[in-house]
Image 1 (cartoon, rainbow, N blue to C red):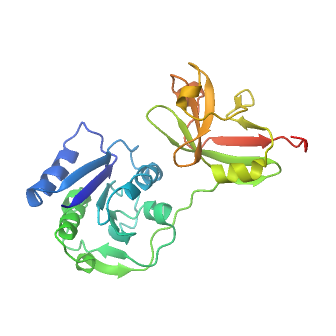
Image 2 (tube, rainbow, N blue to C red):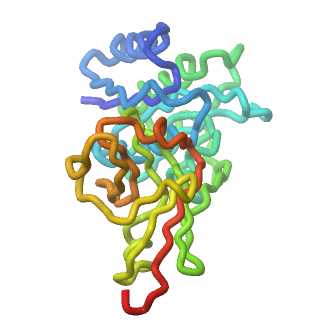
Image 3 (cartoon, rainbow, N blue to C red):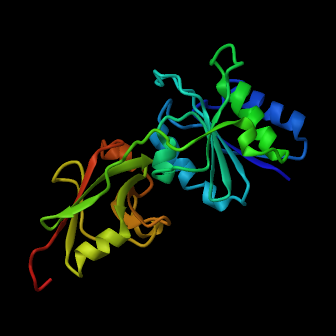
Length: 264
């Protein structure tokens, strides 16, 4: 049974999602079509990267992932890609999302032939879905177009440690308003070396001096921090939305200061 996932910035009000599902089911009645998310912020491939990159590893091999985000900011109007990576297929516009997900790629990349396409207003429907159906029916990757050895490269700066401080930033805000940062537990543990610390948020008046083990360890309206299931630092607030209460958004900085006292 074919598995095809959808990640889009379309929302659920309009008919677009239903159109895609209808086409897939018409050609593959037994296919399983899985909604990863349709609430990606418009054109935000960085947010789409976070959602899809933290979801696809849990799907079986040969799952086909459609990324439904139109390339309105693609001035060169490059063709959409199909990428075969770790036994999964990914179909979408080369906005930079693939380099964020996989790093530098030189193989497993096919530029889908759209020479016969009259317009690009609904590339997902007119191109990507057809490609997904082709693959789901056992079609070869090379039937979709020509091989490439490069993709558009985008880089998200990593958290860094210098002068007894870790500097990172908010890379995602979930539906509960939790602030997910790019500070890994590995970096934190290495830099901490048993010392006391202070997590400084948007201002010096917003700080946390200890870690919690779960959401249940905080009182109502209390700000707290913990390392999530993906081992990245997350900032939350009991029974409220941390992003709103702290007036923080994507890209805002997070700083962890370590005590210089050698006696800890």
